[in-house]
Image (cartoon, rainbow, N blue to C red; front, side, top):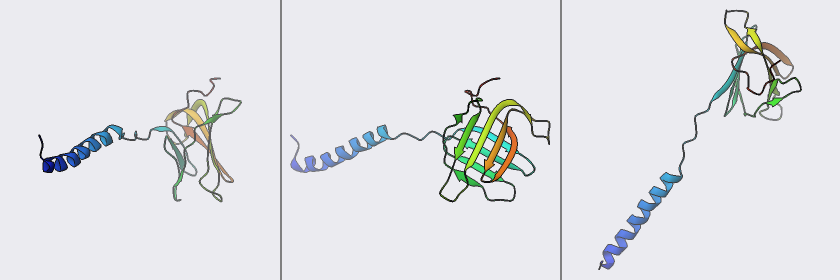
Length: 138
């Protein structure tokens, strides 16, 4: 038979141990973000990195802009269309990726897709490293 003093000490320790086990069993690590595609162009140099957690727009000589990720829609021609907006006055970012051989014009590197990026009133053309699988093959 346990003494009342042992009972008072053991119960809280048992609760702490069980709570720690339960917390450990319920805690999951968030998976690392995956880069889904990178589109880039030159004159001016720009890039858009589409990740599972965000969309990052960069342009030479300007601050980078982080947008929330939203999955691509597909237009009637089978092109992947990513749309992102940060807040009210910020310009809409729209990236359209189409399957087809693309060259950046400055190197010998070839890409599987072409990209058109529109941000506000500006539009740039470039290439994409990955073309989403559901883009129609024409």
